[in-house]
Image (cartoon, rainbow, N blue to C red):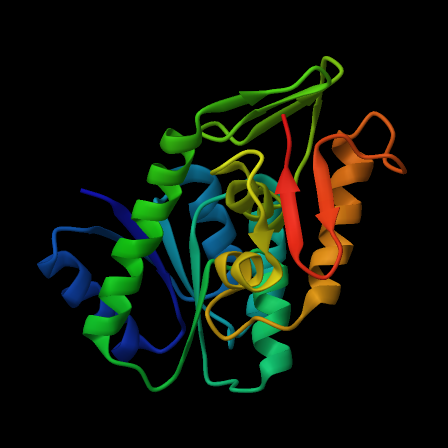
Length: 225
């Protein structure tokens, strides 16, 4: 049984989601505002968070930002905001999924299941990857560089997950974008340049001459052990 935190100030929607989640054998926690949600995440460590952006005290993006300072729990954002900029901001802050209102409850339940599976399966599949300079523990979300722990953002971990599934193999720009940001992405190569540079600064012994995070111009990227 997984624990799902529902963060929404609409009592009807909160009740509907709680009933549906419990019917599918989830333990449900609820919060009506952002500060309560942050306290519940810290104290209860839920397996998945469903987060509405329109909260009475803190904007949902601020709640997401604070969650990501301390936790990699999968977060599914709910929002009536349909603009692509809002989606990009939420995903860049570390949301795992973005669902616009109105939505189907069954679809949301499927997304909850998928988020929970991804969080556990990817880490177990990749395990620990070691190079001569750094170690990546995907199950524990721990990066050690030259003997020191460093912090990687949730998006940086997702980029590494996509690249490290098959070390040495080319991952095209389109495949990498879709794997990290979702199926509606495929042409935003500037995202990849930004995150590749960030990861090189954090992981490579010489970021200007990378050994492990290799760019194939016009094609994509590959991770080399």
